[in-house]
Amino acid sequence: MRSEKLLTKITMGLIVKIIFGIALNGGALYVMTEFVDGVTYTGGLTFFVIGGVVVGLLNSLIKPILKAFSMPLIFITGGVFLIVINGLLLWFLSYFLDVIQFRDVTLVFQNLGTYAIGALVFGVINWLEHLIF
Image (cartoon, rainbow, N blue to C red):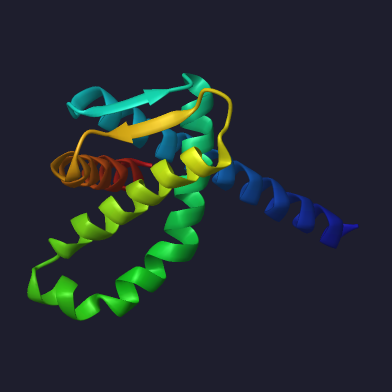
């Protein structure tokens, strides 16, 4: 009986952490789309939920691999190369939404410079959110 309560507590904690992560990533996407000119989206709240899930998966699975392989570049540039990694993740999110074709859910960047500014803003907002929460 005691182990069942512990398992339930762990499971609920994991579910809350996942939901919280989706909300934080969706919030970072919201701030990015509001403050960076040239970044447009469609889909309203659905975009932020789907975007939060996809970015969460990318940050958990792909980003550590990219950071490990690019560690020398990150070190040489004093961390600036992390903007490139965030830009790649945002590009993949945009590409994923285009390929999967969710109903009226898109993310469009005007040009390469917009990806760079968006990646910087997204990275800083995401970092601040995770510092606070």
